Image (cartoon, rainbow, N blue to C red; front, side):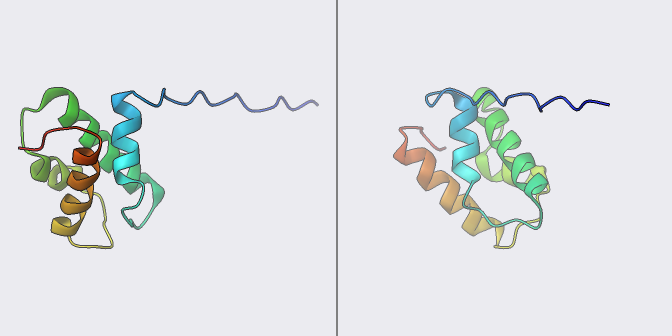
Length: 88
């Protein structure tokens, strides 16, 4: 019986919205990594559609944060603004 090596992971380009969203939440402490991924997905959805507020996107993600949502919003919005994204 042989085992094949795992598939290689292809990273998002540095200037992509996906990378921006995931980088914006990488320092937010969560209960599990999946919570961080879910939060990043909702931030990405907000970046692409902007049909709601960033605060609402964070709330809807239902990520189990280890910090208050307000603090997570502050950290995410500061990062996005430092990358040139406008927060409304």
